[in-house]
Length: 292
Ligand SMILES: Nc1ncnc2c1ncn2[C@@H]1O[C@H](COP(=O)(O)OP(=O)(O)OP(=O)(O)O)[C@@H](O)[C@H]1O
Image (cartoon, rainbow, N blue to C red; front, side, top):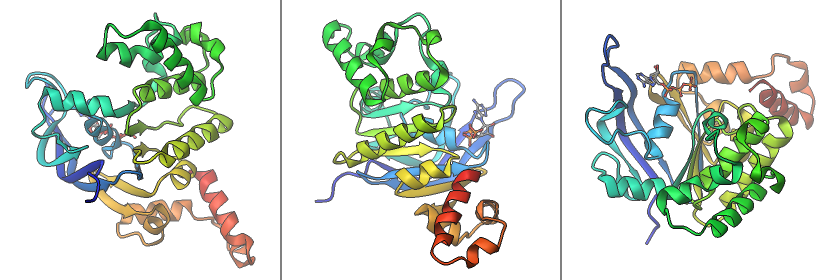
C-alpha cells in the first residue's frame, strides 16, 4: 500500500472576508497540487500571488478557530495535510497538523520572543505542548537544534537582540524543527541571510530530505534554493497555479504568459555564451541563479 501523501490540495479556494472598509479578497482560486513523502515542493510567484496564504493555511496555522476571528476562509475545494482535511478540521486535527508540520513564517527572524533566551525560544513549541516537560531535556534538545542549523552553543543563553538577523533566522528555523516534524512549510527561509549561511540552510534542507518520508513546501524567490532542494515547483499568479512540475521543465515550456515572462527574465541576454560548447549550460545556470 502506498504511504499517505503529505499534502493534497484539490481545487482549493481561499478568501479573506470583508473587514471594515476592506472588501473581501480571494487569495487562492482553485489551486491543486500534491506533495508526496520525501518530496520538497517549491512555491514561487510575484508578490501578492498567494504564496504566503497557501503556506500558512497548509501549515495548519492559517484557519481561524472561531467564525468571528480574522483570517482566511476555505471557500472551495479542500486540502488534506497528513490525512487531515483542513475544511473539516476540528481542534484535534489542527493540533495533530501543527505537531507534525513545522512552520517557518515569512520574516521569521522577527518573530522570536524578545524576553526569552535563544534556548527558551527554540524550546517554546515543546512547552506549548507539554508544560511539565523536563527543562533539562528541552535544553539539550535546543542545543542539538542549534547545532543542526550551524549556530554555536554560546548563543543559547543570549537574547534575540544580541544576534544578527541571519542568526535569528536560523534560530527560527531551529524552533520550527524542534518537534521533529515530518513536514516543513518554510516561507522564504533564506531571505536576509548571507550566501554562506544560505548554503548551510540549503544543505540542511537537503539532509532533512534524505530522512525517510520528510517533505517540505518552500516558498522562495531564490532560484538557486529552489533548484538545489526542490523536486517540483508550483508557480502562482493571482491565486492560480500557472506552472507545475520540475522547475526547469516549468521554465522551459511555459504554458502561461507570466511563467514565460519569468523564464525570459531569467535567460541570459547574450548569444555569445550559448555558442560556447560545454560551458553553455553551466553559464546559463549561474546567470539564472545570479538574477534570481
Ligand atoms: N489578512 C489579510 N486580509 C486581506 N487580504 C490579505 C490578507 N493577507 C493577504 N491578503 C491579500 O491576499 C493576497 C495574497 O497575499 P499573500 O501574502 O499570500 O501573497 P504572497 O504571494 O505571499 O506575497 P509576498 O511575496 O509579497 O509575500 C494579496 O493580494 C494580499 O493583499
